[in-house]
Length: 530
Image (cartoon, rainbow, N blue to C red; front, side, top):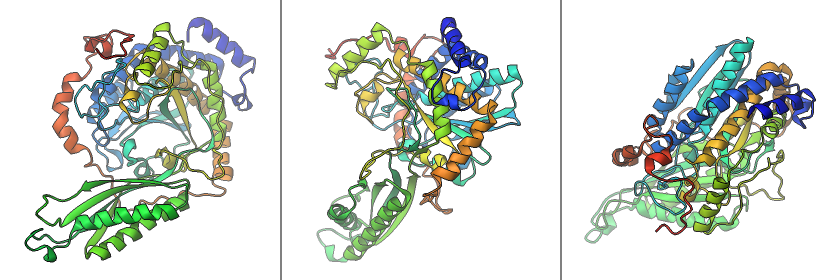
């Protein structure tokens, strides 16, 4: 916020003119103005963090360079760092403060396999062929939270406010593989409220049951007996046959499953070579449903079909849970307070270059032409559908069923892109991503200050969770005390590709932005790639 807008914001707050969130007492306007000014002063740091994490492009469980970089910044700013939390080497927490409420701030930081993409380039062009890339924009979330935390810390110190902050990263979110373990291992014990952020093309928050699904991620491994596939096939017991019969049976069963379910799989091990009957084969399933009970039932159906396939092929089968995600549920009092702050901050001031680049990307990728939004999205409420079918999943749900939590979506990407796709990486190290992260950091910081200075807001949040959220459902995760995080995933990929990817790491000491380092002039409006 510039000085004039800060003054307007303070006047608006003093006049009590902010909707919705004004029902709850809020932090003094001057404190929020100070936090916003601090974030503006750190806009260059935000840009460097967003660009750096983009350049590291680390998939789930391999976020080690990202960990090293971000925790060093936090440690320099007075936060205590703990690495390897919940038995996950690339996970960490950063804590600061004494007494008062404990507020947690988190966002995902992993990327996706096969989505390497030059930023700021409307046409598709991988930086390293076949490498991971930020095809969902997770490179922007933790930089946002770090900027917000630095600003809140400064305001709290200046005003002698008692309270504590805990920053935490979403590790391997694309695998839905860690937050349930965070909860199980007590990472959020004593936390009073949690604010999560996720990249978007809009600026919004909401409350109630969200539109995402719960999920169980599980790998089935069939065990058989090798034999010569041509000379002695009758002595073999094909583990691959077990996998294929399970997949076939599951696909026939789909017709008789609730239309709310979504399920998908990949064969992760199909055997060695054709002339040897495979004695080991594996298939990895995602089972998604809208609620706890339905998701567990879907998972149990998968287990039954796996056992049936093993009997049909005279093999045996074991299964291992690789991840879990509870359904999402946002806290209403917190969402109302956050939306008031989002509305006060407003959308970033997009330049003509930002809008031109947006249109060029949409044109090159044959997507719907839709300009960057200039208005904040209204406060969202519970997802309503006659038969909920949901869609994707996010394991922030596990934390939402543990402590009062909201998700703030911030505008660091452009509309009409394809999720989990290279197109969603194109804008994520451009001024659009930087401006959206700065705006999101202000909304988070202001909401944290509301929580720190307003005991009633935290009390209302906890009451809502207990009396409304927990009224009909309770947290019921599939993972058990025996399950462990799948920390080996993606290691082989990074062992192979990291040496090539390191050549593209951003060096902010030499280049103002990552686009400058790559020799890309913004806005690049070339839609042909020639």
